[in-house]
Length: 599
Image (cartoon, rainbow, N blue to C red; front, top):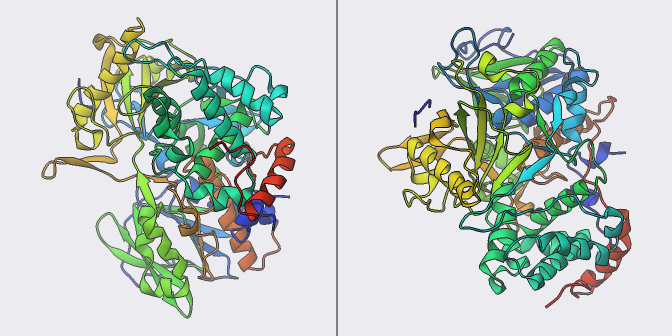
């Protein structure tokens, strides 16, 4: 391979104070001047309208969008690239003959139908020829395959529910889930029955129980993984957490995993959806979304300063006066604004909590206990176009929890050979690696301890092992042109292991209380990002977008602004289960278990 290098408590009430509930009803990359520079560098404090957005990922761009539409002067400070983990990453030196460089990425995009905040933003971003802006660049992924290794029959996972109307009662939902799960070869009927019961228990649990009990129970314990077969553990205990959210079942919060299970089930029933069940973009992310977004924000007056990392918050008179910014050459300067939205990932944001900041809001210290894991992508560029399935592929038994998507079939207005690379690449198999801690099949090492070449070879081998066992060998070695590993994965030859510059927040048990709200105890500091409390409550583009909206609403409240508050969408709650939840709330307050909770 070639290296191309407690009263009734609702979910809304738990979010109150974050700003979430209030509203539900030419890039520059120049070097920094020295500290004390003039007005070209310092933000002007005119009418309290200047905002510094610290970070240009999904949360930062969402916040900037809502702010500039409400008349604020916004400067986005971003050290690497706009779009964060969602951006495209061109592979350097691969474009020939006037073609663009091969499109790399942190991982393939996935837009389930239960997303609402992101689609709302997309509709407001103009795109040539599209009546609904960037939203029209979403195309449906209509299928999915789940090949198994070691001779097992292919899994079906959760497909369309055969009779959605029959799933509107606990018994009906349990029956349908059992029918679907039994299709999982190797899962015994009583295991399927028990797992379906666990799903029904969660869906009919009150918010009090979800936050008071299930938040503190791991998914592994909730589904009683130790009591059942290896296949049960592999598919429904570990599989749902590793491959969907890069979480470990033994540490992931049941509340979070259960919330996502509920969202996906409602998605499959087409209840509360905005669009198809599963969607992807029809072009590389930057072309289809990020670049048009940035152009719009610049037109509206936002300024973007790339290559400039925020390294400190300066406190004066009980609020943030300025931030210290460092450019790529190591030069530093102070940047002043009236308001600050910190939209940095938690591993970077918590480095800013100095003693002065914590003196104003000691709750921020809880972020130091939040956990991150790795979920990172590798792209394989292929000499032939692949037509395996019109959707995502989950390699169920892979040691590294591999999922994938072939890109060319969805890029309807692109010709891969003509538009990208050297003319010999016809398709891209974009792969996510969600488990970096389990030893692989080739080298006996986890991905975190493999070189880039070993990661590429190991991932390829794990996929082929699934396909060859089922008689499908559409990944012959000769089809491979080259590969590209997310550059955030950096090999340390001295320690013989990788570092990851872009880890992913994992919602471990009891982590909700450690997470901050959008409005901090610092009067002019607001937070956005997947570590902030949101309704979606999972490290996703939707969570980031929701948090950016919440931060803006909190800022508008603090500024006593008369601007319209940002609409913040919540996950769909099936009304048919409200009576069951009300009963469960009474049981929970009485210290009793859920009525359907089996021993």
